[in-house]
Structure formats: C-alpha cells, structure tokens
Image (cartoon, rainbow, N blue to C red; front, side, top):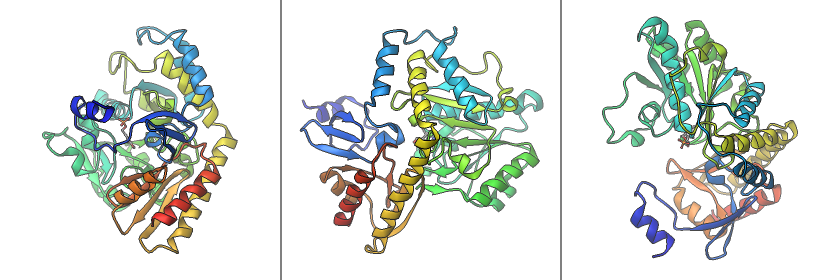
Amino acid sequence: MNTIEKTDKYVFNTYGRIKKVFVKGQGSTLWDEDGNKYTDFLAGIAVCSLGHCHPAITETISRQASTLVHVSNLYYTQPQAELARMLVEKSFADRVFFANSGAEANEAAIKLARRYFNREEGNRRHKIISMKQSFHGRTMATLTATGQDKIKHGFNPLVEGFIHIPFNDFNALKEAVDETVCAVMMEPVQGEGGVVAASPEYLKAVRELCDKEGILLIFDEVQTGMGRCGHLFAHEIYDIKPDIMTLAKALANGLPMGAMLATERAAQGFAVGSHATTFGGTPLVASVALTVLSIISKPEFLQECREKGEYFRNKLKSLKSKHSLIKEVRGEGLLVGMELNVEAGPIVEKCLEKGFIINAIQGNILRFAPPLIITREEIDSLVNVLDTVF
Ligand SMILES: Cc1ncc(COP(=O)(O)O)c(C=O)c1O
C-alpha cells in the first residue's frame, strides 16, 4: 500500500484531501514524493508563517528537544514564563493561558467569559454572541459558536447560550445584547468565512457597546494573529483592544500551540483549578513560539508583510480588469481572498498542476495565506500562473 492508500484505509475519513504526498519543505517551497516542486501560498493554513524548516526554528527545536520537552503545568518552566512575558509585553493583555490548538484557546476564552460573570452573578450572564460565517473550531462549544451550519450538522444537542448575528451589522448586535450576554466573540477578519474584514466603524461601535454594557469582547485571532494581517495582531489595524484574544496557527510555526490572552480584569474569571491542559505551553513549543515571536514582532518584518500584502492584492486586482470571472480581491496583509463568479476548486487543481499551492473556501473564494517570508518574485510567478489558468 502506498501512503495515500494507507491513509485512506487507516485514518478517519474526515478530510477531503488532495491526492499529493509531501515529503520536504524549505522556505516557501514544498516537494512531493515524486520530486515535484511547489510554491506554497497556503503555509499549512496560515501556520508556517516563517516558511518550512526556517533555520532558527529548526535550531530551537533541536536545542530544546535535547534539553527538556515536557514536565507538565504542575511545575514552572523557563520558556513558558518568558513566552508569556513577551506576549504580554507585545499585546493589550496581562495574562496568558497556553493551550494546544485554536479550538482549545477559544474553548478557554468561552469558559473564561462565562466564569467571569458566573462567579458573581450566578449564571444570569452566560450567553455568547458570535457572528454568522465565523469559524471558531470543532470542539462542542467552539462549533456551537461557529456561524456556519455545515460544521454543526449531526452534533445536536449543541451547547446552550450562543446567539448568532450577521457580521458587520451593528444594529443586529445592539438588538441581541441584553443582561444575559457575557461576551461578544468575533474574528477581526473572518478567515474561513471568506476573508472578510470588519469595518473600522463597526468594530469601534462594538467595543463601545461592550464597554457600555460591561460585556467582554473576545477577538479570535487564531488565523489573523502573529503578523498574518501585517500587524502582530489584526485588531491593531483598528486601534481597538479586546478583553480576551486567542492565538494558535502561526504561534509555533507548525508545532501545535494555542494561547488565550486576557486583561487582568477578565483573567480574574479563572482561579486555581478552573481550567487546565496537560500539554499547554511545554518547554518545547514555548521555546519555538519565543523564536517565532522574536522574528515576527520586529517592526521591519511587519512592515514588509504589509507592503508585500499590498503588492500581492494590487497584482491580483490588475487581473480583475482582464478576467470577468473575478468578482473581488480583498484581505489584510498576507491574508488575501479572491471571490470568483465560478467554482474555485478547479482553479486550485490547475494551479497545483502548475506548481502552486492555493486554497478554496466557501465554494467560490480563493484564499491565499503564504509564508510571510514569501518574495515579490514568488508572488509575480503565482499571478502569472493565475492569469494563464483564468
Ligand atoms: C479563526 C479560527 N479560529 C479557530 C480555529 C480552529 O483552530 P484549530 O484548527 O487549531 O482548532 C481556526 C482554524 O482554522 C480559525 O481559523
């Protein structure tokens, strides 16, 4: 049996996989088992933001792997302490909880918001408002928070106390808020939902309403955080701070790690024993995240991300004037979406044949989330290929 046959026989059939077996990566390049080379404009779904096998990451993994990998959160470890300090220093937050995935970080955020109010007010304030078309993960609470029906199918009964409203619609939020709501949870730029950014006026109004009503604002920056949108965190674009933020994906460049960050006030919702995970913030993943953060948070690195994102979007927009099948080009930084008037799947396949990895979401949208180290030359090559494919 080859790798594809073995996977299809022995692994749960939960992924619609493209029939390619990758064996090696370097920078923005991947190689398949037949020796074919691909330029990666997906980065493992916005995860390998420093590219594949970045020398500093490889060095950190091997150094830490030969020093200390795991001891559990019954004890203290230096990399976790230093990473928490650095995340706090570079964000709005005062405290960090370490998890292992985006869903887990969001699960922690939901639990924190509920417990913050339940400590004092019983369970009156327990509802979470989230957005239609949002994506927050696949655990029971996070799939309930997610605003896409296809994710929820067959899992009833869902978790109680979630309200979904249209994104970018402030009146809908105003109507949904009452004294039973504990938090508003949203992505500043919806990723899986189609690369759709919140409007600045909307987000400002959301923050003001949450302040007025004493409701916690949770930003899910699992996909948009860690430089993806041209700032360390996407909410910096809007000059608005949440009370709670979640991170994962690029945080450890491919090692599984999630984090929930919160202000001191919101963090009071948890006490010893309220929440825990065996693997959260191990010395291994924390030291990798430290390396990632020290590279990505450099102002000149983020500036380059913004400039390359703009360059990429402008190039894609220039294709729009040539090809009527392109409806819209949008995004922030190097999270770029192209909505089409046709199915996106066949375009993804054609690009793969020509050595470029891109991604289709929501049926008719192409999503590009290249490593943040992508070059302008690599962007030009993809745009030329898309031109031919279109
Ligand atoms: C915004 C957002 N939140 C949460 C998740 C879930 O993360 P994970 O797959 O690591 O559980 C994702 C994954 O795509 C995401 O994009």
